[in-house]
Image 1: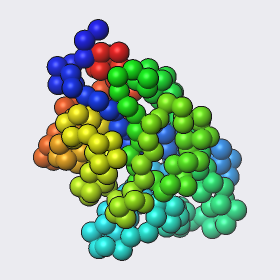
Image 2: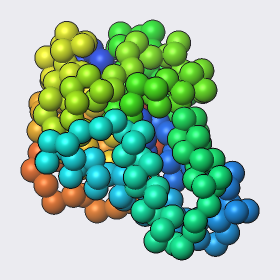
Image 3: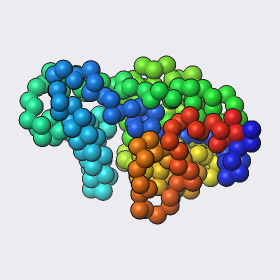
Length: 229
């Protein structure tokens, strides 16, 4: 099977972590008994605030690691649903150290790793958070690199984050296929010169932003055929 012509010179496949390999929408399931019918609302608001706070911190130049931002976002989300439970907060934060894996993630990484492509994660996640997630799901053997924004002290979509991947892999941007389940992330990586596949699992409309992704797919399992594997 031949790779898509646009990807004929691809040498690496770089994945976003949260929302791409790890299914953060299911993060609070172990706490559903405590949260009840507000579980989905909590998770949705937690994720929204988590991203908003990374963007605000990047724009204002007030950086802290993703663990701290995740805690700030959770505090807001819990207050918004009128929950004050330190034990529940602690449980939810710990779940971010080993978030659920999307069902097709491990098989896709295995199919790509060891062929002609290198594999990596490029994430807002702190080094500690990513280590917990990767080790908890035994993904070390199918990843060449795990890259955290800790190294550049600014969050996505800042261009220096995507440059971190090209520098560490020693590749020109157009030799990297970047894969993300987040539309804004996909656009930013394409703006940085990478080839990009956006995983649109929910059938959302495309973002009305410059530099649209090269490919729109519905699941990670569609990647190997694109790459000719």
